[in-house]
Image (cartoon, rainbow, N blue to C red; front, side, top):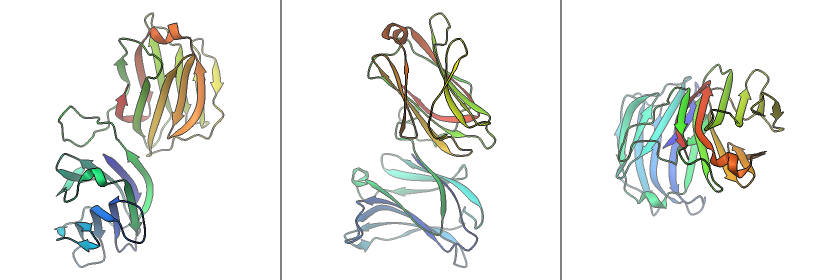
Length: 266
């Protein structure tokens, strides 16, 4: 799933989201999926098409455009085995069958009259095996069992959306005795990110605060010998120390705070 958030300018004529087979300008790459809302016609609509060898194929058109000038939007592009489905602001809008192999797509291009606030990639399937529903943000608190603890090389991935008026975000790991040796806490009031010890002491993480209201985020915790390495939105933010025995005794992952979760993977 590719998630696109943004705003349509008041004077917008058109914009396009292209799932491209390459990123060159000359020659123009093939475009497996061309998603093109048009606002300037008497009947605003969306065009989908495929460009192959410099030639457009037969276009598909959807009337009753679900986007409005001057309004914000959330578009989900959900890629299935044979077709892409698109929802706009939580409602299904269209589907488009592939005309080129999806495996050729390696570039996302966004052009035209659009203000992009966030792009998110949910590239680990958050759905039930074989499911084809749009992802739904799950409320917190959220708890996941770690029956075998953690071991070197294992990665915990948490993806979600920050709520409009956030207060905090907490990710904690609990052991067999219900102790909490690892806690990561983000405070939106003072825009700080910190490791919190089991006794309540804080160790601030000296890095830019990368959580933003109504934006997607990705937290990665990489287990290695001696502790956990942290990355937020692709940026490494250091590590916290924990011995291997303590890592192996961890039994529960808990997440709480002002977020909706789209993916928890480990």
